[in-house]
Amino acid sequence: ETGVTQSPTHLIKTRGQQVTLRCSSQSGHNTVSWYQQALGQGPQFIFQYYREEENGRGNFPPRFSGLQFPNYSSELNVNALELDDSALYLCASSLVLVPGELFFGEGSRLTVL
Amino acid sequence: SQQGEEDPQALSIQEGENATMNCSYKTSINNLQWYRQNSGRGLVHLILIRSNEREKHSGRLRVTLDTSKKSSSLLITASRAADTASYFCATDEDRGSTLGRLYFGRGTQLTVWP
Image 1 (cartoon, rainbow over the protein chains, first blue to last red):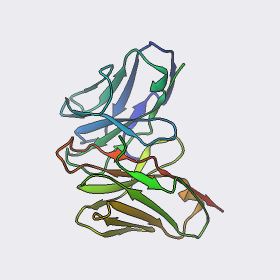
Image 2 (cartoon, rainbow over the protein chains, first blue to last red):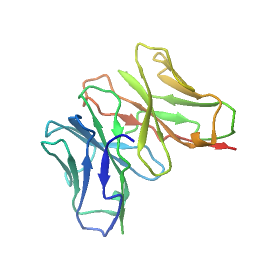
Image 3 (tube, each protein chain N blue to C red):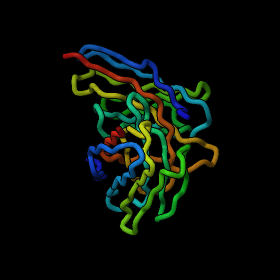
Image 4 (cartoon, each protein chain N blue to C red):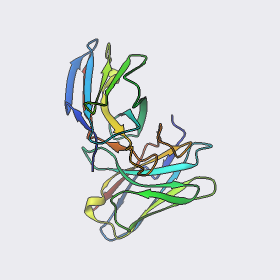
């Protein structure tokens, strides 16, 4: 139990639709990162938020966007869904910005048809 | 891109045996971590080893780090069926990139038979 919760756990969308995934960080953690994990692959870094500002982005197009709220909860938004967006989306929180242990949620499994 | 690569991709052993997984990476790092993932679920942090450390223990886990070879190993001793999971190594990059960003390999799928 990491204290990080994600919703929804599973969802199905069709190509071209938009999706919003939500994450509640562990209490006191001010940094949240989002990762995409395709089947059989390791997690890939999407972006990170620190104190409500984006603080780094991986190799993902602008249709992947995010928000972090004053209570440190976070959202991942994906527009114009493509079939390849089907994946497990993982949220991870940490206490500080420096590299260290990440606390992951259980993920949101997105299927795009 | 994936910085770390685990080897082997899959490992199948009997309960009580030891399991060894290896990880290689490409650039200088600040630290290396190992995570465990049960099927389709979230990742759980196992252990972190810093670049100036060579070996670290945590319960039945032993991690080594060789920065000259850019490699690490994870040893699980006296394995149990409950250890069945995917194991990932994750590194940061010591080049001023996003602090807290981790690079994961594709993982080793460990199966422990009763």
